[in-house]
Amino acid sequence: MRYLFVAASALCLACPAFAQEAEKPRTDAEWMAWVPDAATIARPDLTFVEDQKDLDNYEKYYYFHRPETGFETALADLRECDANARGLFRGDFSPDPTAAMVQYGVLAGAAGGLVAGLIADAILGPAELRRKRRVNMRRCMFFKGYSRYGLDKDVWETFNFEEGSSSVAEAERQAMLAQQALVASGPRPEAKELGL
Amino acid sequence: MIRATAMLAAISAAFLTVPANAQKPDEFDFKMLTESKSVSLDRSKAYILVEGPGMIITSWISLPDDAQRAAWKEQRSEALAKAIADYPRDLQRYESKLAVWVKTGKRGRAPEKPVEPTEESFAWPDLESRRVFTVGPQNRFSSQKEFSLWLLEVPEGKYVFYSFGMGAWTDCACMGSLGFEAKAGKVTAVRVASTGLDGRGNVIDQFPKGTPSLDMNTRFAMLVEPPSDYALDPRLPRDMIVAADFELFQRLPNWFGGTINRVMPFEGLFTYEGSRMVDLRKEPNEGSIVP
Image (cartoon, rainbow over the protein chains, first blue to last red):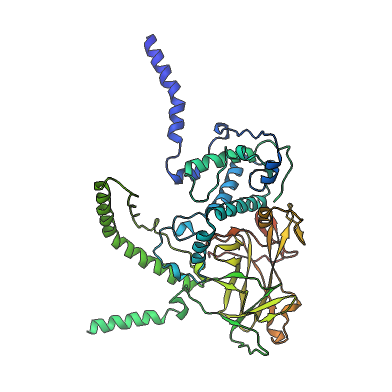
């Protein structure tokens, strides 16, 4: 009887873990639609001792925050801005990710914009893609009413990513966006606001 | 033979019902009218006059009409049918390449398995992305110290401001733009300019000394607004010149991988509430590139 009780308890203890595992997204599409419980997301530690190097790098390393914003809203906003920014990254000739499989002549564009895109990337490379991503995230989140605060690069790297010559896996990307959303919807920062 | 003739007649009849401009929906004609002492405008044609503060380069979308959209959809269906027919052969080629790759010790990159084309998986470009054209910096109709004008003869229809620059060097008005209708017998005038912003998004004359380059890049703003008096060029019939009657476009796709931006709000016309454009006119006019 005792044996049965222990076995049943062990099964029940395993239940939440099993349920969580089953709910975890498996495909990229599932990750993109993933809305986790904020309580399950690890809150990044934003503490650091500010030095001149940090001040010089705030144009690149930062986080967003908007008062009275819920986690899910912040996650949706970050995803929209990330989608704007990630449109820059391409493995195909077309900058438009929806046209990645398109069977269409590359030279047929009225403005020749796709060709220009290719040339630009070839010349300017990953640094230019990183610059564009930063500009896009800063503008997009500013337009949505979020404030920007500076971070030390090492701290920033714990829950942010850059895209230059390679892309970030969807699961990793979405996990970091969720952490950013937690910060964006968390307590109001005491640091100086950097603006657009 | 009779059958073939009947079929030919049926095909001809079908083509006769399709407007000529729908045959190649991704092609359209526009003509730049460059600097000359006099200009003769055809009142049966539509014109656009773009005013800028100098030698700028801007991109615009010529929105397709319903017939062109239908033709584009038809082209997609044809291409999809071909892709479906080709898929078994493509799959067979892939399997052959995969077998060779495995046999030779999996050196190099594995061959990529073709995606089975279906209605859902088969991507096709937005027709609008094929109807983007640039204005400037050359071929000006007027080049003065204070301003530049570009005059275009265009098909009647709707036009939307897309970006500053072209190709990957664009600042796309993806998060808020303006469009207007170009009507026959009219020169529809619009002013485009750029400015810098401070950290709060307010317009500034110039960036403070020492502003980091990324801040300057980010704080670049675009203005699309009614024309100034510079648009009243004496070579153009005064009765033909009209200010653009703007339509609001909330979002545009970032087709060419530029940086995303939006046009600045304009007093009495529209403002932003967060990232949403809000029409301030008594009769709001909001458009969409997808009908």
